[in-house]
Image (tube, rainbow, N blue to C red; front, side, top):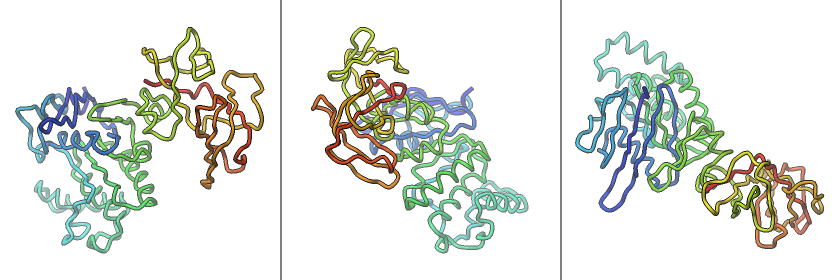
Length: 355
């Protein structure tokens, strides 16, 4: 039985449908991220899971018991869940230890047990030596660790995280991604994480739910979402990619003037007349000069722009048909001048066919 089930979940605000028929099961101990752009419905979905609003349609169940229907929503405090907000929401007049202990005190736990639990969780989040400090004396990353400790110490059935790293600088965000995953691996709390940052979702998640305009586009592991996107939205939102129009022609697909054998690809085309191919910039190898003719996946081109980004060169290559420009990334020591004639050798196993 799934730990948490969303069944046909929808939420409307007047004529606007914010969440549209979301169905999703979370297994016990799973970490799932809701990923998508602003306005895609991910935060509204999280707020319905938390019990802050009722669904317009559909239900939410935990351990087979109903939490929410259009007619009823169990109050947030009775759901056995903890939530971490963007603002951390830690009390400035309480010390680190007092903040973490608050939820246990509300549950009327014995003082010795509270002290034991607080000491343990502060050691886990590496704040044991800061137990007596106040939030104003902490860095942003330390404050976020306090929020995590306070949410975890009560041993919730489900942990909800609403873009918890959005207020941190880039270096701290990167550090805290791994910290959140480390804590999940230690406590195995079923977790739902809302973010618009693909890197956060890739690092922290067992599965990623990509949302767009209130609907689920794809649910898969980070590897599958990146390498085998099902739709052009997923391909374009998760990382950088080149999207080229394509159509099926017998045992081949036609992309511009080129025909590529389907047998060489790792996926089959969607059941539609016209679709697109997704090719990641790093799955194209640049070679000097014209194609050798050894492979159908060698395309002639000319470098029309380039940018040095430190860890890679980012090239714009106009293909030989004159109508298509693709992006190609190479290691920093592989250098081509603007205007150079090149061959784009595409790895066929890395081509994704998307609707």
